[in-house]
Length: 530
Image 1: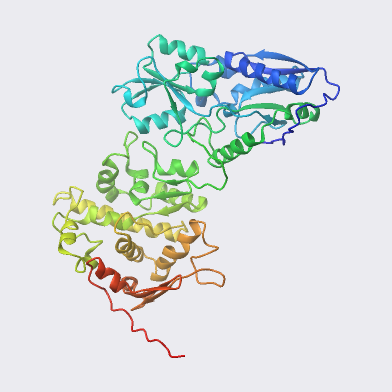
Image 2: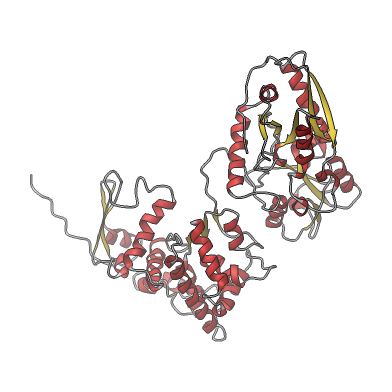
């Protein structure tokens, strides 16, 4: 998309132009926005005549299908752009949230007006907010972004498509077709319907569309005189904000097909987390995730059903039951690994967190903590002998076979060049030590496992310039180990001394302060006489 820097003068020369024609859709909201722009232009350019050229677009005409199904939000722009190309209009006015991330060649956006209310609105005749809706209530919205957030908050709701202009949508609510609908606050406020807003849905609990609430002006890129006239209305703070939001959306390939919620005020953001409910890892990677957490989220890509709710226990049980039959050499698995490597998607597998889940009978010691169990109090050991999963003689063989495939899968990721980081959901140090042992079990060398825990961690946290490796100009801690973890990764537990920021720590003393028996004695430190 080409953006033209806006001007900020309150009075501008008309360049000899006496009449400016604005192409606009015919909906009440589009006409309000175009009249608003026209009034602003007349004030900025005394003597300038401004006329509206209303027209219907395919996006306005086809209301029985979703925008994604008929071509996306660009359908709201096409006829207006053709009018400018034919010379029937000089510029066009749009809701910026409806403008595709990439404009058609030959067009620019010289002005983005000061943003109005960015939030979404919960509108209902009977209920105060989303929480108050009864089980199975009918909520109207065709926005994939809004649908995704509603499903996350209330999976029980019936989500029904709702298209048409603001007046039409409110009329269908009043006719009893829906228990509630979700609209943009700005549109309701502009048309005098602010009293219909029962609750503003706002960040961080609810995220709006990128650039929601902002009005944009579009012109041909070869008509600098028109662009200059329009640029007088450009609001720089709004432009900075919406450019950041749209940049993130563009990086994630956001569109009507991709529900991306953005409220970004700066650049350089990373997308990291779990796979959303009813989606799959491959999809979110293609949509722009930079990092994925947990091995089960990756395995669900192959073993889940279309209706699997990954917020429920199925995210664990399906993986345990079905991964043992997964062909890791299949094209689907190989293609997914190649996708992760090509995209540079970081994987935080937390494989140790799942070791006990899939391998431990009730009453047995959690295998991820077995090496340290003799060092902790008996009450803690007792806790470590319980398993949240229902592992029995009937399924333990299947679960263990599934876990063995997960270990092999981690090795395949590493061999293919997929970036890994060492994380844990469990007992910080103890589980992290086991995570590295399991990396070695997956086929990595101890040195490679240590590199994942140090250099990779710094790199993908954006701190590699400052830490992560021992180099001139970087910060580093001194760690003395009674052993050689580059040969035997299990020696990583035998840390005898740490020097951090000029302060020395003896792990033996720290452990014992918490009731944990030391793993190794502290070194003898002799002071040298000066």
